[in-house]
Length: 212
Image (cartoon, rainbow, N blue to C red):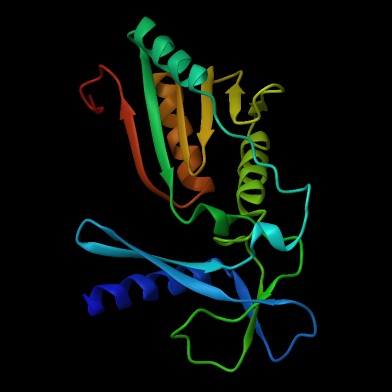
């Protein structure tokens, strides 16, 4: 058990390092937040997340909004896919999504327990527990999509459409879900894998090479 716990925490630290999520500093005169470990079993492995204790009640802010998906669009995607035998459904799961987004404010933390250091961390990327983490990730992912020709829906900012590929795509937190012509869906899959650290994708269609 302890070996798996240690492995999960080492993987999280490796991700923070790979995404250049922090820099070490000697001292800081402002507010210093604690970091804690949140560990959970995922099958036979332990998933660990280093989380900042930036409580929502500490400071009244109006800049933390992140939109949420609507079930009506999910039904629409499934209906579109079912209406055309040449359509496919795409499901993509992004790993450590928050860390993709750069932090645009100064947040300094004490490293989580078990990190042997006298240094503080000045965060450079959004990590779990930051009040604006969801918002920063959502805007970062939207920017990545829009620079590649996607249009963002004015009513539901979780929804995107690519007019050339004719693909509808919705963001569900760290997941993407969409539909369109199969070849366009495959191109979307490649685009997501180039833009983000994607740990799992599924393309579902009637084609013999795809998931069913």
